[in-house]
Structures are given as C-alpha cells and as structure tokens.
Image 1: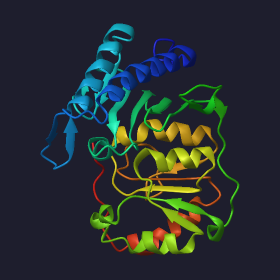
Image 2: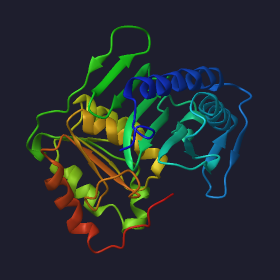
Image 3: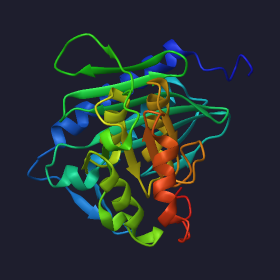
Length: 278
C-alpha cells in the first residue's frame, strides 16, 4: 500500500466522527418535524429532505477536508476516482425516520484499496454511536456523555442459547420465502426484529449473537462490517462471502456463524439469491 493511499487511522477516523456530528445536527432538527418533506423514489422507498441534506453536507465536508477521495452515497451516486472511497448512507432506516420511530442512523465508511478501514454508525435518537478502525478495535459511546466503551462480541456457542435479530419476513421474498430464517429463529433461544444497522451493532456489543439482512446495499453494510470484525465477530453475505457488497449480510459472534449459515442454507439453496444491490 502506497504512502498516498494508506489509511491514516487517527485523521480518517477523526474526519468520519466529525462528519457524524454534522449529520446528527441535521437529523436531530428534522426528526419528528411536522413539515418534513418526504418523496417516494422509483423503487418505492421513501426519501426525505433530511436524507438529501445529510449526504450533501457530508460530501461538502469531504470536498474540503479530503478532496481527492471518491464518494458513493445512496442519494447522489458515485463521484470521483481513486483507491480511497467514502461510502455514505445519510439515513439508514428512512422508513422509521419518516414515521417518527427512533431506530435510524447515519452510516459512514472509508474503503482503502478494497478494504473498509473505518466505520461510524451514529444513531442520535437512540443516543448511541458505534465506530471502529481496522486494527484499532471497536467502540460505542453514549451521546449524552461518558467515555467510549470497547466492544466485544458474545461467547455464546450454542444456537439454543442464541439471541437473533432480523428484518421483515417480506424481505425474504426474493429468496423464495422466509422458511430458512424461520427455521433458524426457531432454533434460537429468542428472536427479535430490530432490523437494519441496529441488529449488527447489538451483535458487536455482545447483546445479540446473530444479525441478518437478506437484502442490503453497499452503503447499508460497509460501516457495519468493520465494526463487527473489530469487535471480534464475523460478517459475510448469506453465501458466506466476505465484503460489504454481496447484497445481504449476516453478522455473528463467530462461534455461531457456520451453523447459522447451514440452517439458512437448507432452505436458501433451493432458491436463486437476489443480485447484489449497488
């Protein structure tokens, strides 16, 4: 890795955290606003003026502080070139955001020469922020105050003792239905549907043992991957492949990963997986 493209963890992480601060300022003001403007995109998902305002602000910060870097975001696409790429989801959980449900977050990641090196997940309505840098560990902060706490995944080694969180059953439609997920849930001690980023951050904290997203885009997963890995867990798509661009995700404490994939696979092997989303 060249000196020009090497990830300088302190400065890059500091930049990502400052970007998260700027995003939180916008989303806090807009959340539960009576006059929030919401539109429906071509894929029938909602987008709010806050989504666009956050991504525009983050791109503006990067244009000033790291102008040579490429940026890819959910609302404004892929711009720039080079081996350093910032991956941004301005509001992960927009459906929750527009319905005034507090489970949503801004996701910020830096990928250097194909490897995600920094990840920040900031959820101001939950009062939590998670972050990690490759080789430097994973941390969580209470946004109301207090020192960062190092995170570590759980040591649960049996599915019968595991806590699982996933997404809506309808999100399994492209996989031929939720039978595999239902089988996995029935084999676990407890199952929940926290959904989106939160399932995976709770795995990183050691609160949950398995988190699953059957359909996801690059910007949904990039920041989550490095945080889970740095907390000692595993993070792959449902085919077991590494990387945040595989169109789906399963995070675990590592001990349960292969068994969880095996249970899912008994059903999913008969279905054609959906193509990765860009």
